Length: 442
Ligand code: AMP
Image 1: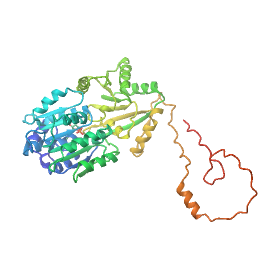
Image 2 (image 1 turned 135 degrees about the horizontal axis):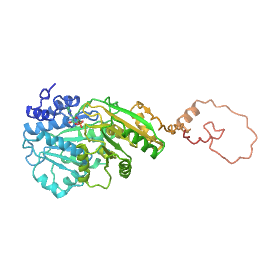
Image 3 (image 1 turned 180 degrees about the horizontal axis):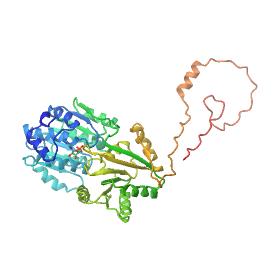
Image 4 (image 1 turned 90 degrees about the vertical axis):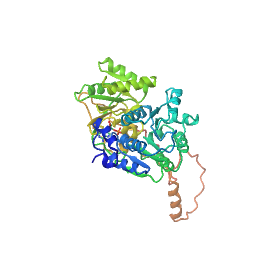
């Protein structure tokens, strides 16, 4: 199948061919004609499957071919949860509109507000933005959305997770007119919050689900390793990084301060790593990402800020030095490898502190996680035993029992003096409830 078969203009097809993109991916084959037909879309497709072009292509085509509702307001607004992801989308957009008269601006938090006002006065047709800064521009009236034709949310679930529900409502209200079309994309959309949001934002959406959020990614080999403590994790990490098949590698840690600490430790051992630490300015962060994408260094250490959107085909390994708290985040982190048909490896270190996250991920992915061990670096830690369910007082049972039990009259016994109650009674009311034993670690 060709892009023109999906209704895409030959000029865009030529642009894509310059980037070596000739055949649509599944999500593009489904989403592009649906979006071109004017439908709202609720789309879920795995990481690295070509989602960005699935919404950018119909958007650019619309701007190229259809008359604008307003000459001044932006026609297409793309909202992405993080600056990194917004930058990634903006870069792909710029490639698509190169050589046309279409103007696009990027509105990110952490950048100069007045420069953004100037850029918006230039009447761009496309705005790519993060939600917080976008809401600031709407409030200050430096951005009007009454002429908006296409509203696109990339990684909508993450936008909600980051607490931008109010900003989303505001954007929706500002651009609330009959002709607006809305597209919502992510790799993980089965979220109760997302359902509620989509009911407000989308009009009779076409649902495109190409893979469940928890479906195993066939191009990513996932392996877990038990670890006893920090030093053990570092020893395992060193072992992995010394393997021949490691190209570029992204390591995820729990906190931003851990990124710097780990980077220093690795560099002291002769590896070439850079940390996306918390205290860096936005420009410095973008520089680091850019430099990594040019393969100037092999190892990038980061937190979940880079778990979505980083699109680098040379990343062969993702290593979870610490597991993420949310299972969806695991799917996005490992999705930084195995992109666009390439094979990737995801290695995760699981220590006692990671155990709860491991259980959440295991249940999200329906149990399909494999543990392995490294000779000479086997862990003593074997996991934490599951707690037995607490004994609970089930009132409904009490009532049913009371109704069903026949009532026997007893002979009156001689009254004894009442003893003080020492422990709560069990459901039969005769013996004290036993306390549960503390959970053991193996
Ligand atoms: P995405 O899921 O949008 O982040 O895209 C993942 C990667 O796949 C990016 O590097 C895209 O440039 C690439 N890509 C997107 N569509 C295609 C396609 N039709 N053929 C080959 N590569 C593609």
